[in-house]
Image (tube, rainbow, N blue to C red; front, side, top):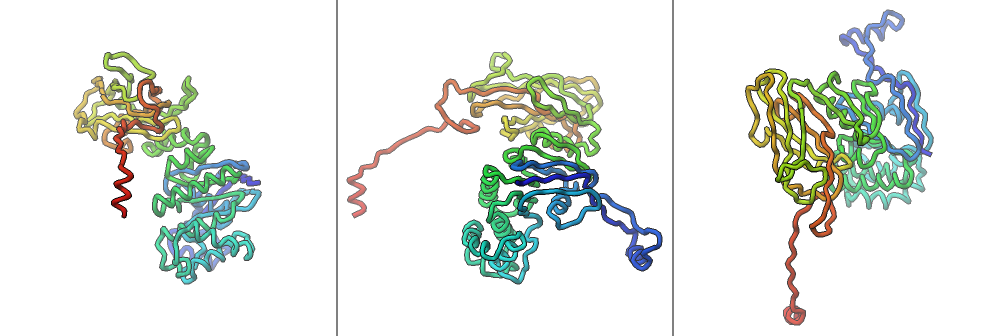
Length: 417
């Protein structure tokens, strides 16, 4: 069983105006309080069921790492309670618990014991730890000689040497090379298939959407959003442009998708169409078919600059392609109230068969983080079908051509002799 239940959880820290205030409060414990409480987390409630995977997302300082430390017991809550069932393995701060003067092997043994494994179990698992970490002879060198990537390899290998009931992973996996990140996430996916409950903090949208059943968004120490990963991540994306969430709204479409819309509305999108070469609207598009993405906009306030961008996402919410008029050197300047603009993006749909959506962004600059007039997810849904190309697989069509040479085996044999 790998159950985690968080009830009314809160963590507060004392803030003193000066070091003398801290000293006076220590010397006069029954006097007036000389500090203010700063709540890093408050009123956090959620439950992770056995075998479920939850992704924690939020900006730096939102409280993600604090929450994981409370759950793992490395920090005590100010209020509330945490209940869990099963053996927990955690990978929080990089190298936490490692002694820099001890060797990797010695640290692996100590870390295993801290996880509740017996010495016999640890020694039997050491060959597997060494094999997975792939740090070679460095396993018998002091950890102080390790790079951050080597520390992460060893820490992850130890934490996952035996499948836990609950696995908690902070952003430590962002350190290191792409090869080991891929290898680590494959082990996490294997644990998921075998029933491990997972809590993971990551800024990698693909990792959250491909592994997790739900996502939780923390904002300023509060639980701001909980639900399907794509819905929560779209909201988080909008929140980065509007920290007060004053312009963000989410609407359920007839297709069942949840559309996230944000922006100041100083300029708005009034129409979007996918057209063929004859100007006919499309919902189904052939692989490699030439299309025009046509977007109409309206300016509501005098603007110094304006650009429009689009992003194509697959059915899992992963970005297939994105571009904007800023990057195409066609930013529009000095726009007046009531002015209407029509943007026409022409391209060939070199995508694999499947369902896709288009997100649109009207912004003052290249990024919608500055001057976000309107951001709209699921602006248009369409399908790509393969009717006249070879039976390929994948998310894009590369139009591969094959040339084949049959080598003379007799001449090869003579040359080798």
